[in-house]
Amino acid sequence: VLSGNIKNRENIQEPRFDYYSHDVPDIDLSDCEFPHVIEIYDFPQEFRTEDLLRVFCSYQKKGFDIKWVDDTHALGVFSSPITARDALGIKHTMVKIRPLSQATRAAKAKARAYAEFLQPAKERPETSAALARRLVISALGVRSKQNKTEREAELKKLQEARERKRLEAKQREDIWEGRDQSAV
Image (tube, rainbow, N blue to C red; front, side, top):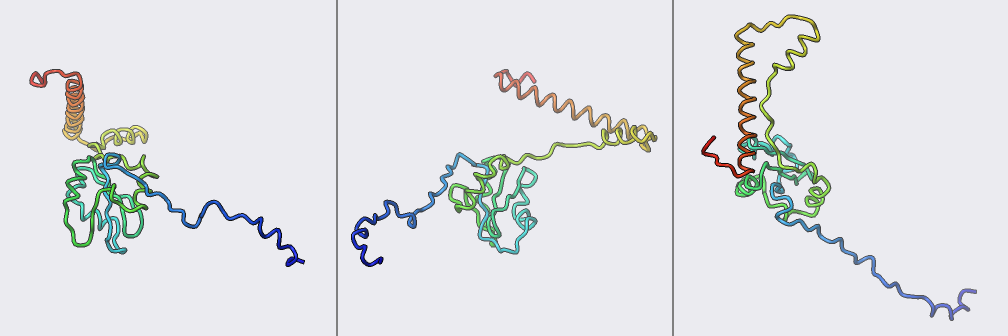
């Protein structure tokens, strides 16, 4: 029955598109998009976060964080593009480093997907336990075991920190407004 229907064979159309040869376009990241992020790659699969942090230990105080891509790729997030550029000069036997613009497709995709989490790392502000101690003591209704000199020293430290913060804000405002800095 099927062999007698030869006329309909001529009506079979060839596909217009070859979907098997479709290439996924490479994710294009320019150098200015994430200048504070670098790709760390080609390290042993056994490496853990602590191992990578040890490689970049000199940058931790300036602000440095790691975001994993896979077992042998990670993104290094620095506090500034200058620090990231400086880190690109590191030579290490177990780790290779390159700018994000030259990174693997997976690393670029991770950077795009987690763009809001790849903001420049900032160091944590200086903290004090004074407020927490006061809140806990007042909530529990107990007396503080701190003597007067310790309380005064802590209060003085807090006042100095407030003054320093106020001065920094004033300097930022003066710079923004173009005021003379020599008067400060």
